[in-house]
Length: 233
Image 1 (cartoon, rainbow, N blue to C red):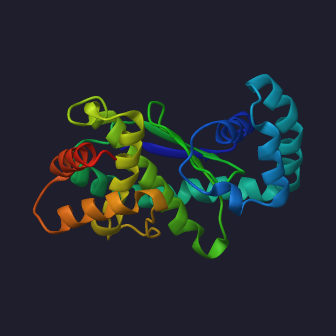
Image 2 (spheres, rainbow, N blue to C red; image 1 turned 60 degrees about the horizontal axis):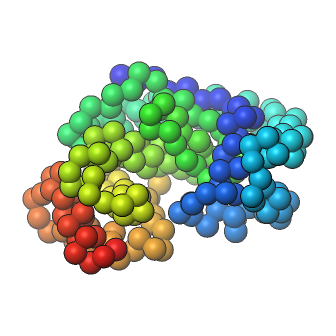
């Protein structure tokens, strides 16, 4: 069974901020950030990596220094809790996708930005801390959400029918498939998986198809691809 470790890394953190400021993102994470962080996002737009690092590193070093005790505590608790939950989570994910969790290690990077990307090739997930009263369920929900994305990339992205989709169509379908977390992970203590507004219609169509039939994950993906192509989504 894969191990899960958590840590913080200032280079991983500033690169998350840089990519968020200069690339496509699904969420409305900017609106939920403190004003000083929103202002920093604006400063990073259009900059290259070297320019970004000069600006953001001193800013994050100060944040880390002010919050080091809490950050140390969070990475320890995050590691402990996710490892407690992983057996049930991995079992549910393998049952859903019918593919093994083919990683030896998952590395969680605590980020100071309310945006949680992932690298499916490297088994990496960026995760943000939340209010103490629901942080455990939030961590598990983020992990499950990103792990489903990883499985979709790993086993389906370059295979028909998903290989027929444009990158945007693939992203939209991948994000919409996470409605399954609310139905097939009942034994895992995690938050309710919500959706991005732009995926509401597709998510609803997928949910109606899956819940009103006895179809498996492969069938659902085939339906989703066909639905998107026929409706020019």
